[in-house]
Image 1: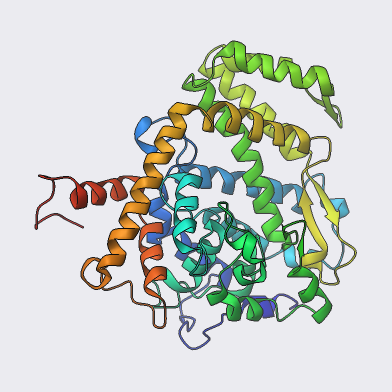
Image 2 (image 1 turned 30 degrees about the vertical axis):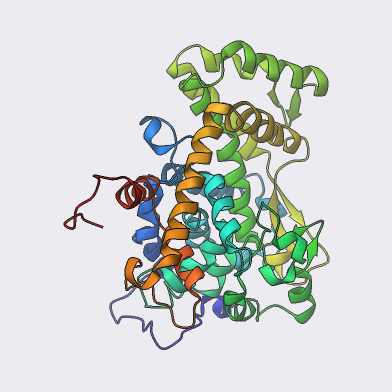
Length: 426
């Protein structure tokens, strides 16, 4: 079976298969991710808007669930839909076992993101620049391989293929220049502490494939496995469309402003037409009618994006899991970038009212980090005790795992007079 090497686990002696077990190794990984504490904590972590602002918009948890649904929809297109005829004989055997791998990648892709969104990520990286850095995707790998409470110090002990499915950026922090390491935005990476595990995960590939897979181009790694590419496309589709729905439903951006931005885009670039499907300004006006029309319109937009994905061959690779990847259609990609950057970021994330909350979150994280560094043995729980880890990394792990609400609670308890009791549940 060509996939057998990828079903192996790094720690071979701690995961015996039960005599009553009928699940695949990949299904066991999926179960461990969904039942893990890190997955549950996503319900309390900011996606775009803060978790305490209402009960309609997406959190990291509901976003991850929607990414998983879209990811499986994309995979169905490869397995039995319009992309099936493009599947090579070499990739086909890997599709038969891909379902739980892709689900695992989609559910797990944001596990490592800290409280308070990307602002929280930047705050932690600022504290960790001289100690190996902090990056949300790198933290996801660390959670699955070391921190999740399944095997102490070994995480869920994931299979090779599931580990590779969440490895969006296969370059270590130390491979970047000192300038890139000190930038306010963390370099896209995994941590040096996980290098041995990453090298083990890519062992089944040829030496040429391994070298190319780990290369950096235009400032970040550009290669990933087939499974990771499905997750990446699903994440992009969910991010740019479902955040648009949240923005409109909560009236974060006025109707006239949003329609004017969309009209300008289509006036400049023309409608998007692919295989008889079309996106133009008329596709978006129903978003402002009522909640029924909005939901139907979002569904139709998502359908156009999903059915426009194609299977791209990267001929420089030998192994089918690296050679073939899903990609967003070149006619669609500029528009999804427009939705993410111009609509979500420029019109929402960059608003002073949102930036104010982001800066508050960064202050909370920075203040907690500094205080924990003063007395780590007294303030950090005993379970944050991976052998050989620096104090800074232990503090970083602890804070990164907090929800927004828990971080705020600890901040108030630690710094606000009159708040807190020795009997508080922590």
